[in-house]
Image 1 (spheres, helix red, strand yellow):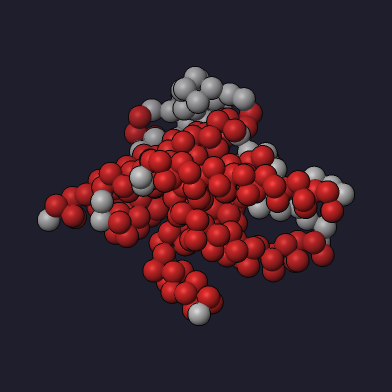
Image 2 (cartoon, rainbow, N blue to C red):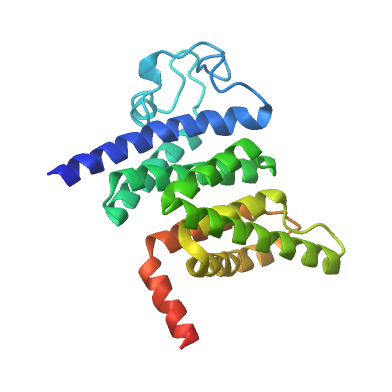
Length: 246
């Protein structure tokens, strides 16, 4: 019974966090305050009532349109709220620990926001990236997580210098280094390396297709996805690693 209550709380918290993520995604890249002005329709500029801001439910009740001017509401809003609630719910089902769920899911939620911002603006706010990294250090034993974060940050920094030197162009941004550190903090060294390898496997065919169409794609979404998949299926990843080494 208690587990179901915690699961319900996880879903509700995820919906609320997802609603706030939409604010971050919309405002932070534009240098706007996340608190002022209050929530309003981007078209008619009218301030929204509280019942216009109920995560997921308001979008359904309003038929995906602004209550005042009937302008269409971006599908991004309910999708981000739904995705974030699923992240919190699945993480709780995975860990069975409510506090751990809040910590780890908050990191994943921030990485979701970073991925969408990176896709849309080709830029990553340091404020959100550093917040994700800082929270990730508390996902396990603090000293161990911090040490693993430093190892991955240092490793990616060296890799950046080598690749940039031989490729004769800048490779791997500072944002990628911070994401790598976050991966190390949450997964540890062995699973963290597996997640980085997995991100390359996922990204390779997509980058090949994008290259033919002369499209530029960010790498952070693939790192974030690989991190989440490795965390959720850590036993499978561990078995794969053992099989490869065996």
